Length: 177
Image 1: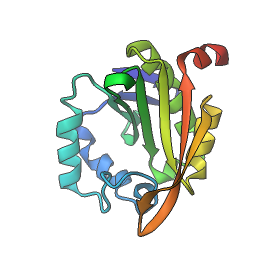
Image 2 (image 1 turned 120 degrees about the vertical axis):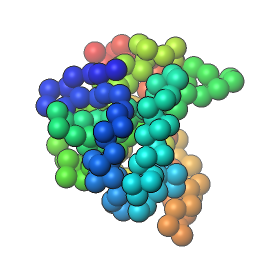
Image 3 (image 1 turned 90 degrees about the vertical axis):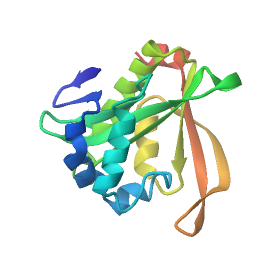
Image 4 (image 1 turned 180 degrees about the vertical axis):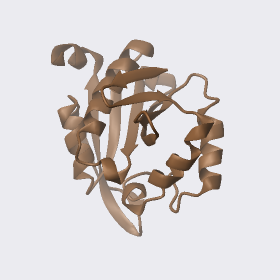
């Protein structure tokens, strides 16, 4: 899969992404904003393990945000099950040298549209930890709305943090266009 977005794209993972994955993911400023399954330090072994998983997904739900030269981040969804089967959780990160350039916003907008078209979804949501103001801005600019605050529901770095839930409905996406 490949979605061209001007100077960068969203595309499928490749085993050749290993070096740039370690280069940008091995950053505490990124890992502190994500779940603990995203390790820090982010090692070559972590990248190899992730790439084996990502390159063999069925259905493919995890993708690279890339320039024409290298991976600079990632984006994906986690499809929900059972009574939540028409929902998915979106997650994304961009390497710190690329922050503040609007890349995450463009990627989230495009990937949200792709996800509604490719998967049978009615709702996409994101969980944002307290203090991740940049991610909240990305979601708002992408048409997501804050629907809940879960008080002190996240325990990260020996601290309890609020978690904010943002969502967009398929019908909302049609109104944004």
